[in-house]
Amino acid sequence: MKEPISTQVSIFGETYMLKGTAPPEHLRRVAEYVDAKMKEIARRNDRLDHKKTAVLAALNIADELMRLERERTEVAEGLAAARALVREREQDVRRLEAELDEARREREALARQEAELRKERDELRTALEALAREREELRRERADLLRENEALRHERTELLRERDELRRERDELFLLLDETSAPREAAPARIIRRENTGSGG
Image (cartoon, rainbow, N blue to C red; front, side, top):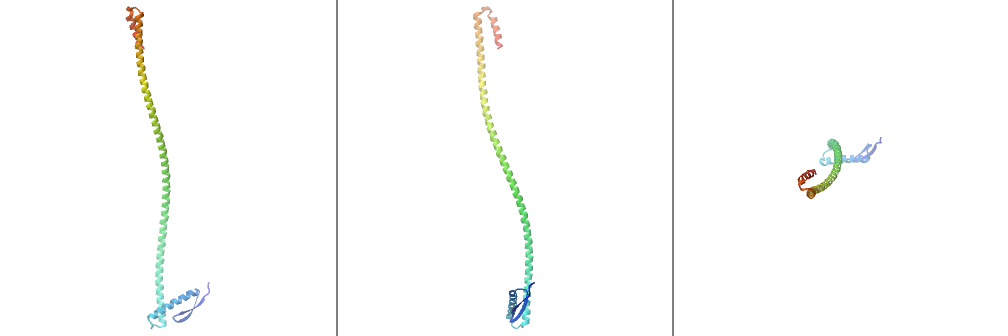
């Protein structure tokens, strides 16, 4: 505990010895403030004696002190309200930060999903391109097969026509041989036999 310190001050023309644990500078400022208040009251009413001047100065100082106390109380209440508001805002900030974190996680999940969908889209596009190439190749093969089939049909038609032509030539040769080598009266029977033989192929 600090030892009391004596400090000499002057108030309204009189000297006082103040003792306290406060610094001497503080005690002098207090004495100067009381002295200024008493001088202010005396200037307003020079008929007041020393005692009444001191009482009025004390009343004015008490009034200022009470007003300061009210202001301090109001400030304290305002500060308490501000602190409560700050706590509420801090809760809002924490809630918003949590929502922001959740939104970030959702955005990251959506980004991953989007990347997967893009990859799947690229794979499908590649598969579609491969199918398109395969379809085009099948179209070309089908066109080649159709042309080949048409050529085979044409060749078959030509072969059938040649076969029919060869059959006619064969029949004509048989007829010519029969006419030149066999008796004329037996020719009809032989012609009938050859026709039967020719119809079998």
